[in-house]
Length: 317
Image (cartoon, rainbow, N blue to C red; front, side, top):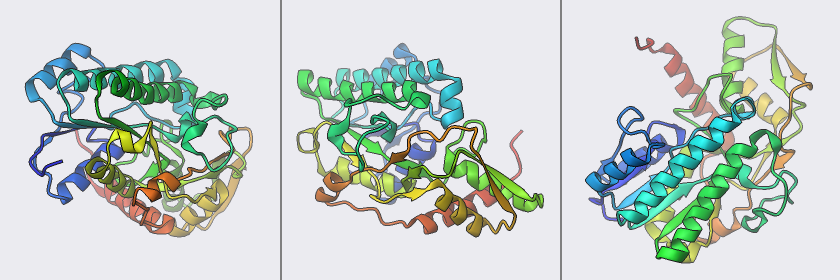
């Protein structure tokens, strides 16, 4: 990519897209194309085609998606599969149709089978049943990977796919009904602290193992791959992660310490745990010359400070 190349970041206001925007700008890329949902409905094929025909982006980061935690995925599976399929199909097809030089599609670690061997290697895709609570989202993401693969095979495009582990950081979703585990816990502990509540209730047993990556590290890895590697060198997709995991209970204690909550923790074992373990094998990424830099404790502290700042700002009317 040239510093003046036209680069479209789809979903630039979300957790992932905003991190990509920050990283690209910090590296001197000055010609970013950005659109809000109001300005461009990515689920509308006509709008997407008209946008690509008018703007003619040279590079595309496909970070736009409908995302959420266990509760949201379980409650709205039809919306998760439909919206994500439409968004990725429209953008990938338009990228082929209007001559995009290179596209990066962001998937999710939930694409792997529920009981796949650990750590998760790229070749484990489609070797077993998916986790039931987020099957709709996972199937949509698998379809995105295969769209890129088959467009590359048939049309000679250069569309690469990456599978990030669990991400967190600035611009995360802290809504308790739709958020992932990290922002939900940060909010729960913060509100329990300021309200002097005696305990915090955590879903599940606390035993599942999860890998967490700061979104700034993820963005750095994505830009690195776009700058240095093509589809022929990466293969169908590459995992992006830190290569280490912690139990949910260990994460809970870490967040409790950073927030400064001194009450009790109660585990609600009637709630689902989700997949027992999701640790990414990042040996392929490491061989390509990239490794994560931000420690979990440092990343949580930064995210908590960002959240406090967000809470202190007046609400928009």
